[in-house]
Length: 67
Image 1 (cartoon, rainbow, N blue to C red):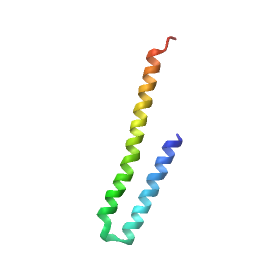
Image 2: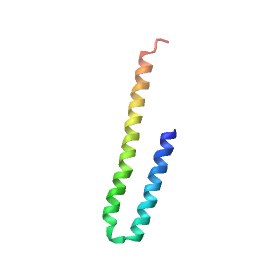
Image 3: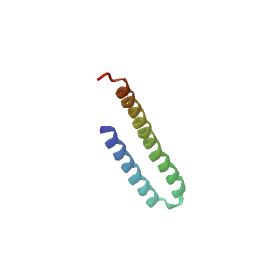
Image 4: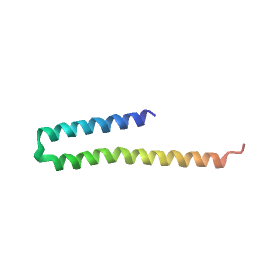
């Protein structure tokens, strides 16, 4: 849960900084947007990978349970 909150806060901070940068220098909008996209996609991919790994571990644990 802490990781989810951290990712959300990080994406929000990055988005706010990107909007501030675009407001200050509109001529570099495309560069800022590309950087922001990279900064948003990487944590989301990490979260998706983490969720996948946790799901696999849970499934394997349930299958191997001798209850």
